[in-house]
Length: 69
Image (cartoon, rainbow, N blue to C red; front, top):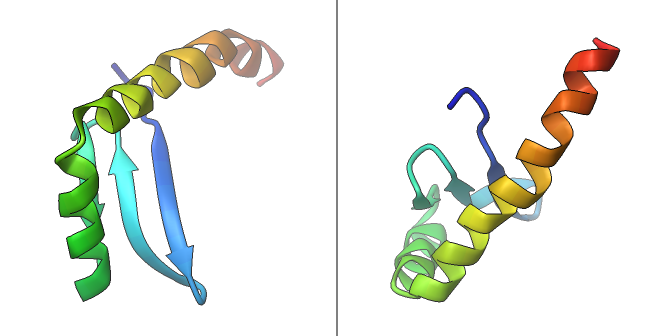
């Protein structure tokens, strides 16, 4: 529960939109990003894929990171 997966979209060094695993959806930070987030959130397969990325990427590597710290 303490692990958070974040996937961000940037344009011109400005964060436009972000998927946050603790929220389970995309959040937009600009006018364009809000529209993109609405589009991404309307696609259930994209959301399911991002949630699976947390399990695939984060949960498999958390043991490695804690051992080296």
